[in-house]
Image 1 (cartoon, rainbow, N blue to C red):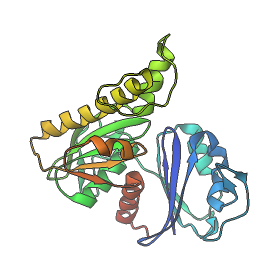
Image 2: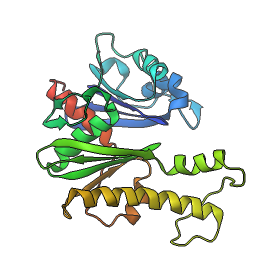
Image 3: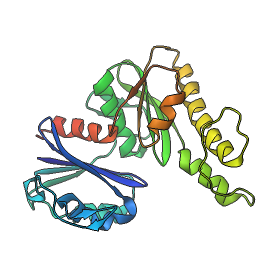
Image 4: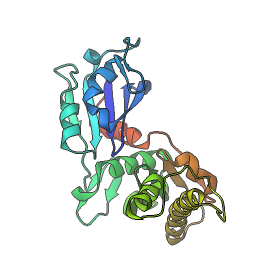
Length: 257
């Protein structure tokens, strides 16, 4: 059995996988990374705190752990100490020049985040055609894959919440509020939320136009996918947990089961 972990800037997502079967999965705030071991074992819920163990497979059955971590060394330390089978092999994914059929076009391959790299690998194995790979979390990344499986470059911009919070924290007159998308907003909360949506979708649309291929799909994942999908007019494929899918591809190529 394998444990896949996607440690992002805000949340830690994980899944237990046996062969092709996804047995169990969960989400934990990065701020609660110290509870990761208990959470995985089923003794801790991020909403209710300590509780009863959930039925299912235990940590002692895990043979391999594959991780994408962009949350920093403190989170990496918690991951190293999760208390799985002591013989389990722990792997932290890093971007390579070529892996799992995808070539990395970054000027320095290792500088590409492991989350973006895993998402690119996951997307390629799902669509195997020219596409945009969009992951919308704390940051939104918009990465291009060629028809030959080459990562040709991409963008990083603030995610929907980060765009709005940056306005609130750096301006004197804007205050927090829950906005809705409106084409021509008439209040500040809607104006900030709609501006963030338009900025994100505009960047996606612009990058898609630069591909020069109207039929190329946008492969969309991340916490804000449900919002952005309503405003994207290009061919679209929604994928849950794209980074975890990419980690599974990496593990399988390495001989994981």
